[in-house]
Image (cartoon, rainbow, N blue to C red; front, top):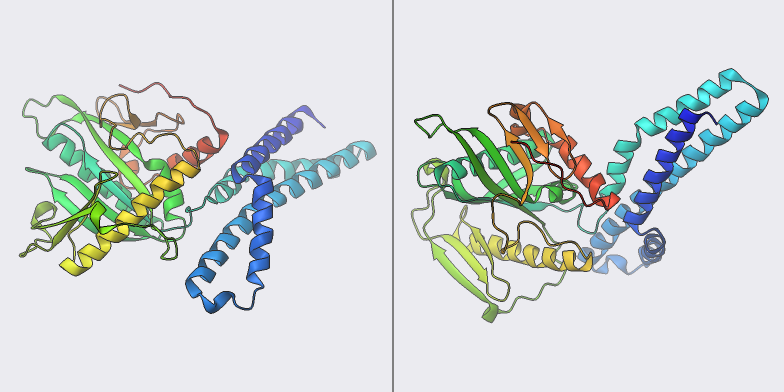
Length: 374
């Protein structure tokens, strides 16, 4: 095989190996066999919730395994055809086989992403929370820009968005917001965005037009199915009601209908302020169950501690991405090195390149921090 083709084949083999490791290949195949057996049980649908969860898990596993098998099969076919063409010295067949290999390599990124979205909760709806860091009005405005950016990303990709709660800044922007994103793989895509985001710009709130650096954070966690049991005891929670208004005076509650629930053993706080008090309590409890499930999910996956847990400062040294608007234009992911020289497009929701790279980065197991931009 020619050197160029051998390099492409080696890169495909390496990618397949990483995907197998991510899926935990042997366990995934054993689990799929168990799910296939369970799917044939005539009593399966006597519990509709359990059956739906089982079929969802089965579909996700089957999709990941099938994708990897397909990659291996196409690589093997191309390699065999190249070897045969070289033996027979058939240049036309050789060019056709090499073109197949090039196409497989060029399609690899999209195929990888499809397989990477096979985690336990990747297919679920997702909550995300935006919190402003220190810095007052400037950080509140940046938090509001992030909120809009992720809502725009969701809308551009066909997701349904529901704002669950907002806390307005004193002068502009927001201090915090909680949003529910509904749609296939919402959590799988958004989960890589958890962390601190840094903005550098000439502040519109500075009369001297000085450059300011602001920090805000994003926290993402999955919506969980009702059949997943998360025990929450009444003695472990404190429920408060309060009067709340959204950014810009919108969604003003005329009664104390907003609900805040604090889970005292973990310090988790969830809020809802968009509907009736009864509905807000239901929303908040659902969000709390999701947060507790996310905590357990990360323990089981032995994930590294998130940059945005309750003990992490929202500030310098913890950011995952920098957005520089002045003196030049650049958005740079500090985990993967992916860059964009069009911040306006990124802030309008053009985030897929960053998300795809971060997913692949997680699977590769690389632990690097790209040099920050100034």
